[in-house]
Length: 95
Image (cartoon, rainbow, N blue to C red; front, side, top):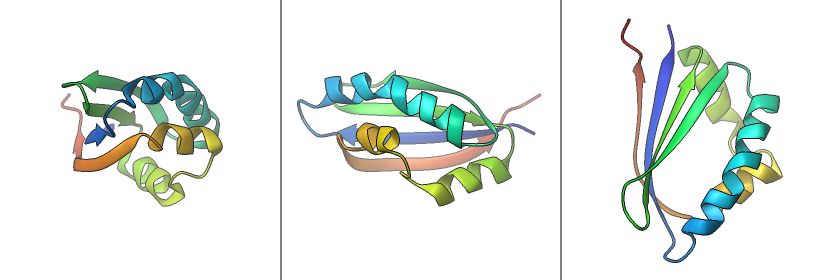
C-alpha cells in the first residue's frame, strides 16, 4: 500500500527562492537514489511555511529513505534553506 509522507516546515526568512530553485535537482536525486519514490508535491502555505507531500511505494521505502538522510549534494541544497521542522507524519493512501 502506498505511503504518504507529510512534512511541514519553515524556511529561513528570505530563502524561499533558494528552496524552490533546489527542488528539481533534489527530485532528480530522489529518483536516482531512493527505491520506491513515486512523486512529491511542494505546497506553499505562507511566505516561509511549506508542506511537502511525498508518495512512496511502501512504508519500508519511506523508512529506507529516512535512513539515508541528506546523502547527496542536491538533497543537502534543498534542505539548506530550511530553518525549522514543524511536523512530520506518515499515512497511507485510501483506496
